[in-house]
Image (cartoon, rainbow, N blue to C red; front, side, top):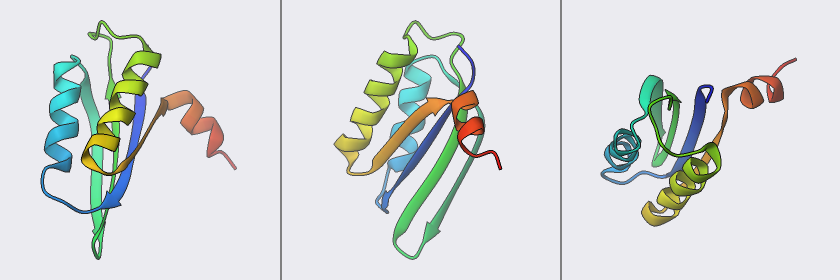
Length: 90
């Protein structure tokens, strides 16, 4: 599997980063790069990660991470890095 891009946003609350990064570790994914910021009370985050060690296929990984976002009350989008790059070309 190529690298994956996770984008998350929503109202800020305690534990967002911890819950998402813990879940990635449980799935045996390695974080390649990560950024996060607060815009007043809005939380935004982007993580690029590699899942070569994961037993999950991309579809299952995407569904599980997006469901986690629902559980913690934020929106999470997961896509292949190549799709993300092609969507954002000029």
